Image (cartoon, rainbow, N blue to C red; front, side, top):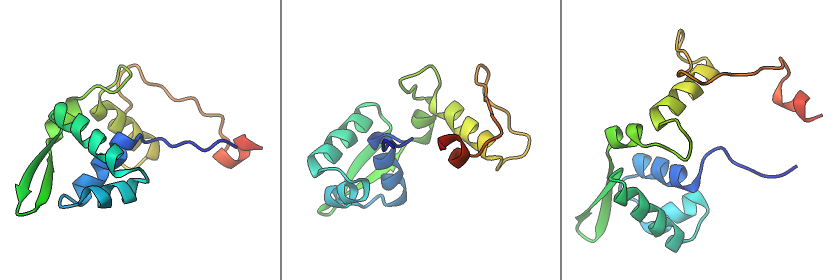
Length: 118
């Protein structure tokens, strides 16, 4: 079976920075499983899109996330982050009554993930 992940490295870096805003590049890289150079590149991309801001606090960087910019950001597809998040919450059933965004639909075979793999 091939190994894949639902979240991109951009998303993993972003999640880490939200949870640990005073992280060093090494902390971020270790948490995500990438090099420090890759972590810096991803942070710069997030900064270029005005999703992440960086400020100095002594010798350390402190990162902040602009939630409005994040929610409005369009991923590679036609859905923005807010729509994707809504769909994931709807799928998980964690928010009763939450519906999928327009144009999204689910197909369920009724089988669990393990049963589908056999």
